[in-house]
Image (spheres, rainbow, N blue to C red):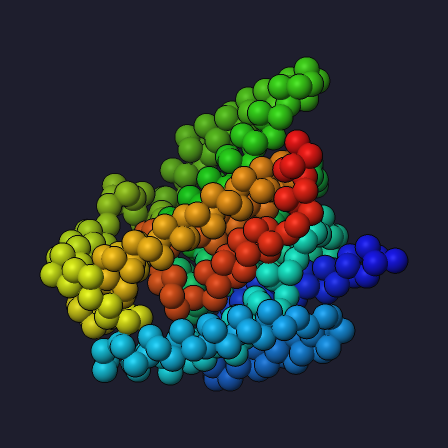
Amino acid sequence: MRMDKELLYDKKRVNMLFLMLAILPINDIVSTILYTFNVNMSRITIMLYFIVIVIGIFTLIRCPIYKSDILSLLIIFFIYTFLYFVSTDYAKKEFFTTNMRIIYFYYIPFSIFFISHIKRWDILFTEKKFIVISDMILIISFLTRTLNDTIDYMVFSYNILPLCGIIAVTIIKFENKRQIIFIILSIVELMLFGSRGALIWLLICGMLLYLSTFIRSFNSKKEFYKKIISITLVFIASLFFITYIIPKAVQSSFGNTSYILRRIKGGNVTESEARLSIYKTSLEHIKNNGININGLFYDRTVLPKNMYAHNLVLESYLSFGLLFGTFILLAFIYMILRTIKKSHNIYSYATIYFITIFLLRYFVSGSAFSEGKFIIFIAFLYSIICNKQLSNNIKAE
């Protein structure tokens, strides 16, 4: 009976996680459609977040609330308060942006109350409704994007990426072959309308997932030969895509509208002078500041045009100094390694999914300390580390 109850709670928690992920591309779709009617898009976003928050409150009533969750919430808010007072005057303004308020009242509490307690991570990748909804969002996103591209390509690609990753896991880990057409759609969609990074992270996710299943196939000849055939087919398809599809796409109208295709057309797909300039300026300030703690968002204060560092390591050192920044990064690395060790058999696919889809981007893009997906990633690490059942499995091995 207790196991049934725990499974029920896990399903409710995973429902909330998926809703938190799906609401972002849904917001993009609704905003794109209503843009033609001059509807205020910010109001749509607030309304959708409000709906999720209401659903979250009702879900929370039906799930257990632990004292440790309340304590964690209070400690986190205390840390944010402390960081506010040690931050520069300009950086203090960042603490009150709409984006940060969403993090305080939405991502942090929901990540603590729901995501950090998930034990059955397979639900996210096997529940039919999640897969069907992901498919529908991908199709509608593709259609609306061809009609109107009001949403920034970077925002669009990283909002849809978690759903693309779920589809990749269902195909490779759970052998749901019917989803192959949707992973192809994901790649095409990111190629035509998304960013280089998002496409790369999805491909890396797929490769690591396949590698993990390929290594396990060594114990079975039948499985091993199936993997070899699959690799051959993927190689042939990739060769066809690179040789015929991409050149035609570059010469089409998408060659002028797609960020990735424009880069390919200009022969500078891997270049990013602006980012290299940001890194250089950040390193100079890190050397000058030494061990000084400057508070969150210090990179916005010292970089041109109030930009962020586009790198988790640089952002940490700029905000917390060399000493405390190193301590934070080492603690973060320890959490990741601990998670990999505890989930290396049962939930290795979930770890690959979260590292590639939610973490890697923060080493070349985005701002980890002002984005909700980074909070979700930390909550995932916590859920694995604190899962006693996984600890028992390790001892049994």
